[in-house]
Length: 301
Image (cartoon, rainbow, N blue to C red):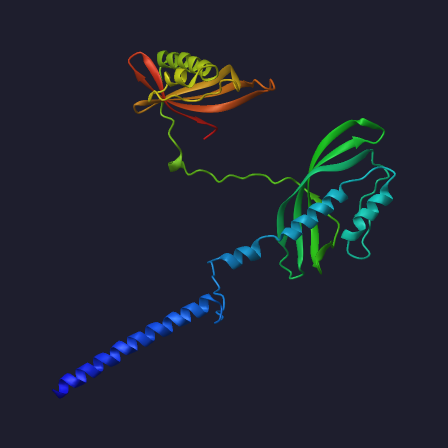
């Protein structure tokens, strides 16, 4: 009897404890949702984010450098004072207002058409100076004959430093050679095999097929182009966009059950009359006396 009474008391205590806990939890959740209990915002850290942000050039740096280069490469004979006034806000104190350029023997006037920052590098000497490489497309006009013009592309490095809410140019800009692409050498064991050369008969068959394909690809309907495809799927070509002019430098290789055909194709833009040459690769199969395109790719390997 005594044990039964104790068990009922424990059950009552557990029941009312659960009711109170549920009520308190619900109250706290609603208080947070309604803003009665402030919760500090959680900071989410993305791996590597801070390093990337530190390394990335600031938008203000690129904007300042581009604005400066537009003014620096803009001059007109006899209006050197106007150029000096435009450049004055960019220089640090006591800098030559013309930036080291002497126009006495200049025969050309200059203005910029396109300016883009190419690279921003901070110096390792802790000076706070950054060297900003800028590409500028300039148009030079003959001073004594405004009809004579020429385009000159330049790369120049502009040393800048933070100065309050903006920047200043701390030294004369200097011209540098354009960047040159250097591609890593492809390992010998990763070079793609071109297969074996086909005989003259197969080469001639592929050549005739390719010429027929290009004529239909630039004049036919998707259904007509599908006739040349192995999967027989309607394919939009270049009809109404380009006309076929010539196919050159055809090379044909046997690669397993497929034949690989590489060629340069000269096309003419119907809208402008301009001609463009592109490199193409075709993978072909023969079924009886007919040839079919399995897939085609554009561009060099």
